[in-house]
Amino acid sequence: MFNKRTKIKTLLAGEFVGQDVTVMGWVRTFRNNQFIALNDGSTNNNIQVVVALGMLDDATLKRITTGASLKITGEVVASLGKGQKVEIQAKSLEVLGDSDAEKYPLQPKKHSLEFLREIAHLRFRTNTFGAVFRIRHSLAFAVHQFFNERGFVYLHTPIITSSDAEGAGEMFRVTTLPMEGAPRKEDGGIDFGEDFFGKSTNLTVSGQLEGELGAMAFSDIYTFGPTFRAENSNTTRHLAEFWMIEPEMAFYDIEDNMNLAEEFIQYLIRYAMKHNAEDLEFLDQRLAEEEKQKPQAERSEMGLLEKLRFVVDNQFERITYTEAIDILLDSPAYKKKKFKYEVKWGIDMQSEHERYLVEKHFKKPVIVTGYPAAIKAFYMRMNEDGKTVAAMDILAPGIGEIVGGSQREERLDKLEQRMKDMHIPTEEMSWYLDTRRFGTVPHAGFGLGFERMVQFVTGMGNIRDVIPFARTPKNCEF
Image 1 (cartoon, rainbow, N blue to C red):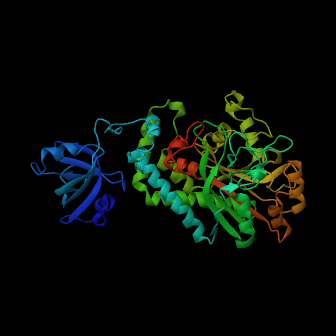
Image 2: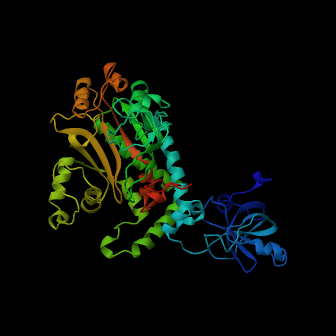
Image 3: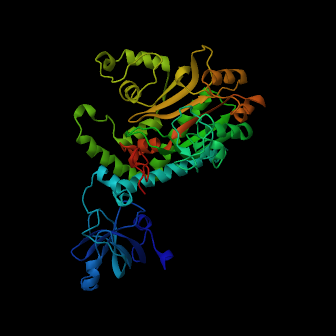
């Protein structure tokens, strides 16, 4: 019964005039007891279904409400109405599911993003979120296609782990121990030997360390999975649960790493521009309307599509951290005290600094390299100056950091010393150090926050609007 249906996107793109088709979807609007705007999620565009007067009884007509689901069979005919090439002259109509018009939250009007976040289980049915999540799907598919074309091996790294890749300590604990009365050791600390895994375990913050193990056998691997940060950041850029893409490449240095990351970002954007042109045009217009509401000084200089074309058509600017700090210190924003956070060599640059570099100074994505060792992770390769590491961050307009990566420290003695300096126990990480003991090679990798990538491509201002069900401080619905 159901596999005979034709999707609305296929119908609108094909040559079906004169043919009988079956469509199924949800009612967006119903006018004059005759004209149904039907949508099935395959596209933002609706198909108009014309119901002849007298074809349906009054009871059925009353059930055709916004949100109701219908199965309709009819003939595809050329449309006389504006904005549509074809419509369906209904021959039969069946209501598959009713929707109480008085209670249905999504009325045919504009809803705020804040309101839609409160009904995230229904927001997929709106044009904005239809476009966002079709693009998210395309970008996810393009991730796998990019790496597959280049001979990478897709590695599934663990979600439950006993290591902290970032050394940040902001992790969600995984335990089966009771909330009260947990077993204790002699010193009063919790005895995790009694726990399910016999040790303290957490949700992963990164698959990188395990990814390096794969790269030491397959040369090139990538991971793509959920990661978790128990960071109490209630911002438009942070999530407690998000998806990360983390390639690790043997026989790569920092420059190879930068080249791959730049190529990767441009590939993803090109894929979306080719396969989601209609959705991107809709979001481009949506963003333009949103920008009109802002004061002139806060408006973006480029529209969404213009920005995306600019990124794929231009090489990213490459500067050192030291050069970035000098640019910020010499900037009008710094001299007029417009930065909220201080600027000096050694700081971990804030979002406002990163966005100044890409949006005001260079007006394009920027790759910053050579960060101070003191603010970076233990596994990053120390540069010859003894002060900086071979790290690289890619900064994008609108959101700041989108990629973080580095050449990894392949020299065992240097890595062990760095771990000692940062109080990271080498005994527990012996499995990781084995990659340096047995056939070490120069290698590198990076992490791309998938939601930030989706944000960049869709132009959405809040990261909670590019993941189906956002997990943030004090919020875990569904």
